[in-house]
Amino acid sequence: MRKLVFLFILFATFGVVARAADVTFKASAPEAVVMGETFRLSYTVNAEGKDIRVPEIPDFEVLIGPSTSTNMSTQIINGKMTTETSLTFTYILQPKKEGTFNIAPATIKVKGANYTSNALVIKVLPPDKAEEATKGGSTGTGISKDDAFLTIDVSKRNVYEQEGILVTFKLYVRKDIGGIDQPKFPEFTGFLAQEVELPQNKQLVMENYKGKNYGTAIIKQTVLYPQRSGKITIPSGKLDIVLRVPGPAKQRSSVFDDFFGSSSYIDVKKELTTPPVTIDVKPLPSGKPASFSGAVGNFTMTSSISSNNVKTDDAVTVKVKISGNGNIKLVKNPEVAFPNDFDVYDPKVDVDLKTTTAGTSGTKTIEYMAIPRYAGDFEIPAIAFSYFDTKTDSYKTITSEPYKLHVEQGKGGGTPSPVVSNFSNKESVKYLGKDIRYLKVNDIHFVPNNELFFGSFMYYMCYLIPAILFIVFFFIYRKQVKENSNLALVRTKKANKMAVRRLKNAGKLMKENKKEEFYDEVLRALWGYLSDKLSIPQANLTKDNVETELAKYGVDDALIKEFMDILNTCEFARYAPAQASDAMDKLYEQTVDAIGKMENTIKK
Image (cartoon, rainbow, N blue to C red):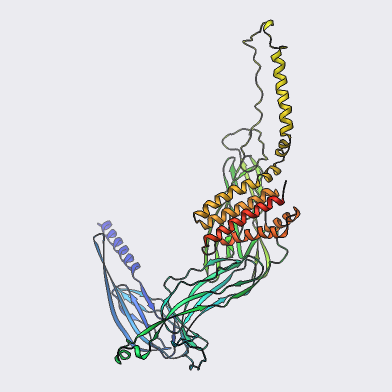
């Protein structure tokens, strides 16, 4: 019996908690109001509540309230009917003075439990200044240039390469809006652009601007990362808006229209534009650390290892986590130097980003996996990560601790067979030492003297013909044999074929309108081509040493600049707003043409 009573109390408690978790009590009011005007302060609870307690509001005069309204909604889903009830308490307030004021949370009692609303912050704006006569400022419909305009605000106009800046397009209106066409924003050429998520349903917020009160709304916010130094201009943005203005007196149907608020209106279309803005981009200072790969902002780095004691053929994982604010999506993976006797696999990368008005922040996690093949004690050197700190205008380097790794012999047991340990990129281990065979002494067959093949015509021809063929093939293919013995030269000769193969795949992605995959494939084709052509591993390739190496091979500056422009375009076009198909066509043709010119310049 006690158990039944306990279970009843337990289930009843859970039921109360579950119902309590569903109750919401919310306060709402305008973010900004004009001095002398009235506004509504509402408290809404989605249950039957009573005994509402509103805090003292000394900065506002309560004209009316609270007035109560009830709203009920019924839904039938899969034959089950649910009814929801909401209760709203409304106050009509009027500000007593200008400034920014806080309204503390209110409380209400629902089924014996108290609930607290959210607090509010309300900004009281000064009233409009007296209208001044404007000359030529108004159109024939009574709309002046001050009644509606679009502004562009840039957080910084003097920045470093890859340093983030926030660009905001904001609408100001003093008339009723009849409609807004799709805005036309600039393409931000020369920048990597990452959009700030904004609400789909934009609400106008009152704001006092140059002595006048406007309804304002942020139309677009973007964080830009300049990809080159120099002066970069952001072109004008455009927005077509329809404003509703009272029609002429002759268009009104009767004298009672004004009294009942039914005056006729006409829609006037107005084009709003922003002026172009020039950003002065400074190059990053000299003295870059060896581990610097273009990270600009403010970052932290941590690392960990899955285990310090493993067995041969067991995987060991090193996890590196980079967090912070800046161009984190473009941060290259730090180098982890595993011992030579480890099979090293491609790292797994996971990026979690959030773009806000403060910039792009988030975390990039890289997992490096390797498999040891030898038993023994090894060391994984410290991992270094460098970035340029825009707050201190200096380079900073973060270094992890080195990892000691003890590897024991795996399931094979005993002394391991000798292996060829200087392999690269997952080549198979080659076992040696099994080349001794026993001599056969049984079942010996003797051939009669008159059946001997030795000394016959066919015997000599079997020697002569292979010798002649060997000499012929030797002279024909000796150049190819010599070239094939030089692995770097082979990679150089095949560089164009590999690039063409990747560009064919990029062409397919372009036809399928897969923008990000297209730019990724073009980037892989270019970096792979340069790696093969210059005989430099991709991990060691940077834009700086590519320019230096190409100059050594006699490539002219125009062609080097063309290659760098294609690389820069691909890097920021992946994250820029949707590109037109003709832009991808043009980039594809430029890439094919640049590789063709490079083949004619560097001949090996």
